[in-house]
Image (cartoon, rainbow, N blue to C red; front, side, top):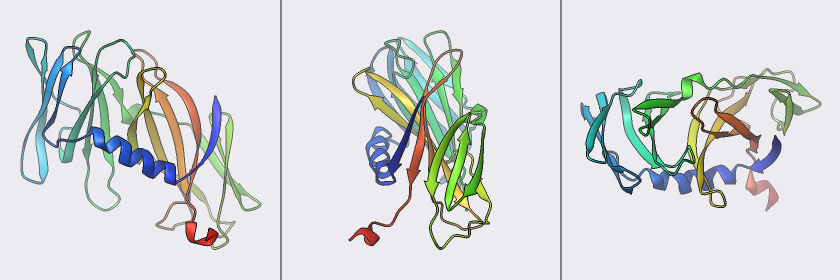
Length: 225
């Protein structure tokens, strides 16, 4: 398992790159590998309820009712997550409100309609402490390090938030999509995080596999100019 220490600008790159794959709030057209289109059906104006994904798969019309079937800005993204030559559906919807977060689910249609990823079941076991101005995070036996700023008290507690965002990540060499999972790191009770835990997750039918973990750190570019 590789460990990386990357700048936050990479997050911004992935966000701008990957959100381009979510072009339609009402669905996604995809003319390959059986799935012809995915249409999001819902009730309500801004806050959507009773969300249904209507999928044309070959000659069939399949309806998927997500576990999280209400919220703001429901979106779908169709990609080859299982590396089986077929397409799967990544669905997301936002909770809204201050401190809001998103729900993420992936569905496969090649063996019936199966939920193959639910973000609520992603369990990233970790602990954290501060030593000599460095946040030391133990992530499933691997230590990650991130420096805390002088404005932060080294006696403060360090807190790792649950999943903040999930982004599709494409490996062009393998022609396969993965999930990039981001969890903010907070010191004390401040509103701004000091960085993110990044997990790169391989999606499989039975056991999803962590293939990369690392730190994406916040820093102020103005201090270097």
